[in-house]
Amino acid sequence: MSLKNIFSKPEYIDGIGNIYPIKLKYYDDFIECSHLLYISKNHFEPNNIPLLELLFYSVEQFNLSKEDLIKKLEKLFSLVINKPIIYQEYENYFWFQIIDLVKKKFGDLIVLSLSHRDENGNYYWLCQCDCGSPPKNILGDDLINGITNSCGCSKDINQNKDDIFDEKSIISNHNYDNIRNIIMKQNLLFEQKVYKTELMNKWAEKAMKAKQKNAPNISLEDIITTVSVGCGKLFSDLEEYSIYQLYSDFFRLRKIMEHDSSVHFLCAGATNLKLQDFAESLNLYHNPYDDLFVSADKLTGLNKAIGK
Ligand SMILES: [Zn+2]
Image 1 (spheres, helix red, strand yellow):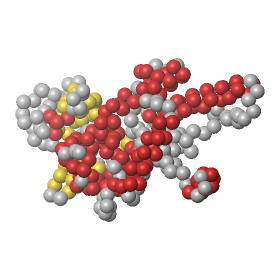
Image 2 (cartoon, rainbow, N blue to C red):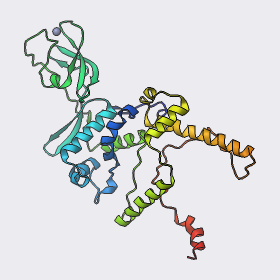
Image 3 (cartoon, rainbow, N blue to C red):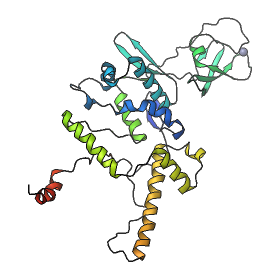
Image 4 (cartoon, rainbow, N blue to C red):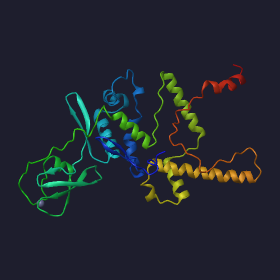
């Protein structure tokens, strides 16, 4: 068993680099675009073309325009990869270019590192000028478009510019499925089962709603406040948590509390109670859609009871 998830470590993919689990402070940004991840090949018939292409071809089906889809995907990818991403298309091809300007030269400037993203989503890069003045943060678009090519010391338009786009650093049909799986797994998003018939889908929706009716109504905010109170964590600490870390604490806390109340019941003479270990394994990857319908063999008792 790997400790990657509990320590919120990224997943590395060749060409792409690291894919990071979402921190809770970016959760609101994430849910604005993460719903696209729920769309799987199972939603399409026939589905022998790549998923990303299916998304683009059938974008209206999801009440989106192509521009919205592009914006959402750019946002989603840049949130998890932590680098600017721009959509590109050429003839019949399209892809998402990951932009990494580190070590690239723009006139007199060499890029040292990615500095930060401002509130409008613009990326700034820390650059060193040939003249030796202290490094400066410069807007990525200004570097790429040749608007800024020195710290301000040189008035010359210096067109000597490196090739900035690495053709291996792209998200396209060939790796979207893999990246999608990683993002879903890291952030505990579960693929909804798509059944062959529309009627089955309606039943599944009903069954899910009925199931949720019996479950306590707990929002993410409730989980955060429970962990904060129960574990004595500050909200500012929890902002840095991944969803996996938050759920781990929450479910562990519940196990400990369940254990404590079982002990009380047992001491008070309860007999029909099995004491569970509070440290027993948590399975955060349990897909709630997996056991939506009870299998036929489990129904035999019920069928007998109702005389079938
Ligand atoms: Zn300079």
